[in-house]
Image 1 (cartoon, rainbow, N blue to C red):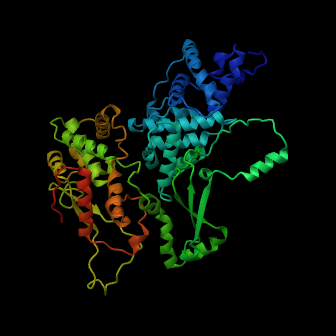
Image 2: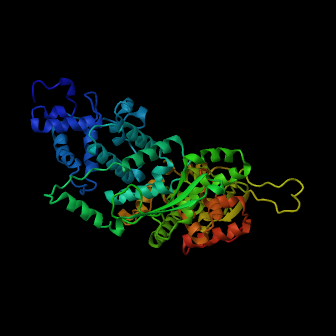
Image 3: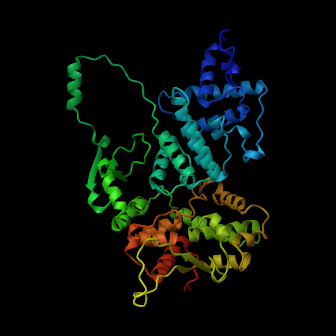
Length: 534
């Protein structure tokens, strides 16, 4: 190294190459882009993680700078160990993170070293790879905000993280993220989720420019003429159709965009998407609409565009849906384990079956109370609260006797296998979480994760993941009924806005019970259902 080199520029990686002029600049560049300083104390942890990330997929974009990282990272690891590097131990005060109190100081490195749930390891590594490809391609750093958003989202296990696909290769993962973001509920996210979605969109927009191939041109006029005379291939064209809906109280235009080139590298999935855009001159209309009760109701359609993109356009080949083989395997295995005498197997199996049949998260299921007027009863009734629009029509006192009373809940019948499990492991007037705590000492979430590993059968059924299980009910209801009100009432979560149709259409509890029973028969296959309902 030149004696004039600034001593302050030497970090934990570049110091290993202080005598190697040819590699020092690359090592220093890696430190700059990762934001490492001499104070960084988890170099071995970070280099091991980076090695894991770059080896996920050996196919990189042509001439991508990450190729030089792939070559030097193993050498960095070897020299670091020779120099006395040691793995940094997890810190108790930072939920097992090895950087402890330095999370903000080393934002990018903190994201790569964030501990996550085993079920999220694959998609987390895929997101980190996306981040690493963007960082290595950039001239300078500046990815602290994206890295921090990624770390916090996976630390808190937000709703968006559970929608991301497992990593298989770069192209499929990018398309999978695009699909997940298209299906994400807009306007009802917490701050962590909003920042995470923004970070993902930012990373998806990063492109590595391919080098220009210089040719020996003939006449410039001839080249320009040939470019003009040759139309673009149909597969590369983008078609737009615009429908003016400003007269319907939206103050904007509904545009349909279809990209017909599935091989082009894009951040969004190459499927038809609905995009709502407000025009600048319509802001005054929108403000007037807020003061008009009727337009306010119509404006709810924008909130519930989730139901347009997520449900009305749902197809049989929906990626989040279990295939028939996966569904039959999952149900058969779960039922088998619910009958086990080993409570470490039977309890998590019953929890999985309850999540599958109710469409509720594991956390919600653990809070279910057991009793005649609670969420589940010992005789196998599942009480579903009916969430209708809070500002929907409410009859006055004069009309109450002339119209049918609106139900606030519906009682649905659970499978007989689940009824037997509830009677075996749950106590009346207690929550399910309190009841099962007497049967197993371990954290039920960890027991469920362990059982899922067994059910995946060494990777044969790798798509059976914890975040996909609760969404099966909503998907099957949508495909069977094509009625967003039924899907919302029986499978919608608290952060789903009611579909616009819910303001105008009412369904009987009998219709809801029948729809649930029909779909549950399909979801359970040959499992016997208790048909009693109220």
